[in-house]
Image (cartoon, rainbow, N blue to C red; front, side, top):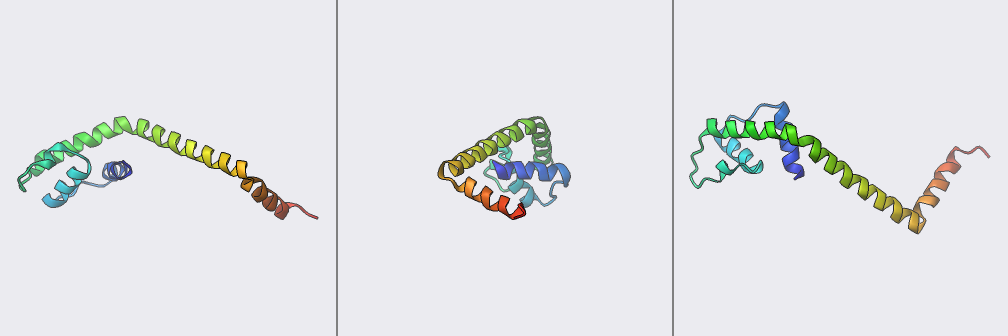
Amino acid sequence: MLYWFFLSIKYQIWPLPTDPAELRQLALDLQIPLAYAASHRVDTSLVRAVIRERLKSFRKDSPYVLLFLVAVFSVLALLVALFAQMFGFLSSLCNSLLSMFCIS
């Protein structure tokens, strides 16, 4: 999912590849069904059009994907903080960091 997200952002900025093999691989990576054809000949104009359509739909879906990723990382950060607090790692780290800034 993250690789798909990276490719979708990358090709919003940079142009699509012109080599048919690279274009076919990109279509496979973006999970475009036309790329799964058994033949090795790929209609590059058709694949380019489908990839562009997929990238346009990504623009609509990207806020939801970003919201999902933020929620997942927030929950993970909360779990790490609770784990650290439960075992006292955070309090000893905070005490050592605070002692560096206190003047004795």
